[in-house]
Image 1 (cartoon, rainbow, N blue to C red):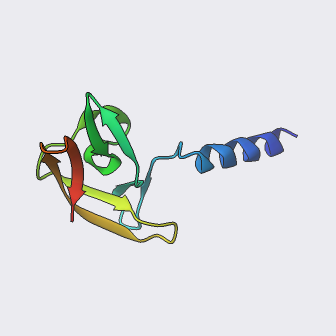
Image 2 (image 1 turned 30 degrees about the vertical axis):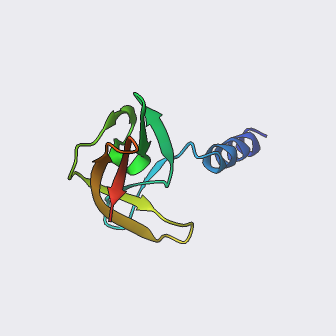
Length: 91
């Protein structure tokens, strides 16, 4: 019974996006393709610090995110666009 409860809880957590970051085959931490608003700036998850939802990476810092459920990724560097007040990973 406890094992079933654990499996169901884990499945729900994963399906809801609770496991935001995972490591790729080389050990690099990779973000999901999510967007957040942090201090009024619309930020792509790859331009935040893993485990710290309040820190936005600086321009030029490395970023990487999963593009689909098949394991494909994209990577680039974080950029801030003052026109639309966004921080995103520029490929």
